[in-house]
Length: 360
Image (cartoon, rainbow, N blue to C red; front, top):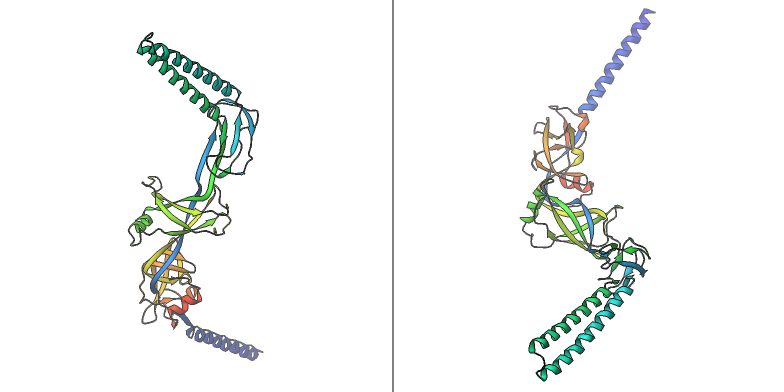
């Protein structure tokens, strides 16, 4: 019985030793994929939160006090320049105009009579001049009354879309009371804030005088079907945020965009001679990013890097690597710092092509 147990124990020991040897042999023969960073020109698309404004957006207000007699338009309606939108009851202003015209007629008659008397040397030249002045004053009163009457009819100053009605028919309006707003959406001004460092890169670039083309990502995560042009930069930085506002103009032929919308401006930013590595070759410890660099003796060394920008599946490295370094591409969790490994080299261009890199 003891011989049997001894035999089983010996067999188990041999089996275990054999398995361990196979595991060690297997581990020793694992070839980890490595590659070099690649140095090249590329372009990334940076996005900036934006506010969308109509090229013209105004408030329509009552210029005279009175009852709102009629509304000729509806909310959200397209209106044409000169189209009547609101009519304030004109009766009082019509009466004032008639009164002014009557007084002008009277002044004209008085001037004719005074002219006859002046021709006969019955009245002085001063009295004739006074009669002329009275007629001029009366004519001015007519013009003023016509202007007040004209203010009772409110027309569209340009083609556009009207917004919410702020008053209803029959309302008693005060002078200056808001009626609605009107937006010209044929073109849209899209404002977005750019950090100081990116502004300096933009303003000192060789193509700074060339108007830059941008895209607009709408709130539904779909690209707007028109391209915009960066046309202006505001005059000063926001002291609280350190940003400066850019303005891009987008044509809006289908009327998709409306005043007050939000979105993201996508602007292409070129990078010259930058180091690019796959994101999967990196790992993080706390807030720092690292890669494993493999030296000529196949020893793995942990190395900190600084990320300058991000592309799909890729990082642009601003500090910590050169194109001559060899980095571990896969198996990051399977190795330890200062460990010796076997490697299999992959060409950088092949690695990037498999990551679907879209770079210039």
